[in-house]
Image (cartoon, rainbow, N blue to C red; front, top):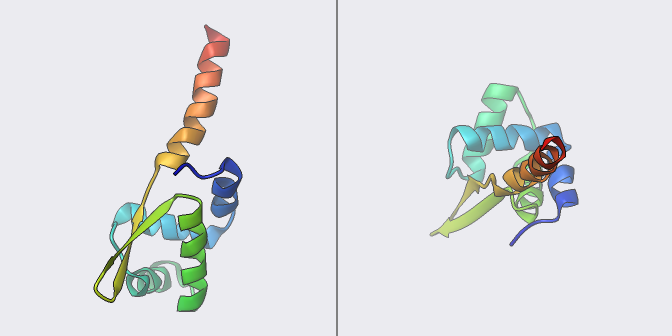
Length: 99
């Protein structure tokens, strides 16, 4: 499923969501608890787990994060394809203009 470009930009507009993506880029397959702990220790975020969970839901809706369940745990993984599609849009258009 390809997310709407507007959804991707909306997801990237929030600094907390960008930090979540940074943490997943550094290490994939993290639980909500792990993400919250990393945000607190590295970025001094004091957001509740519920707030971080809502950010993750928005990132998932934008196609930037995928989840998988293993027992009672839910693991989050970064998906950069929506970003690549956006970049390709302007790179392709730019290279066509210069040729």
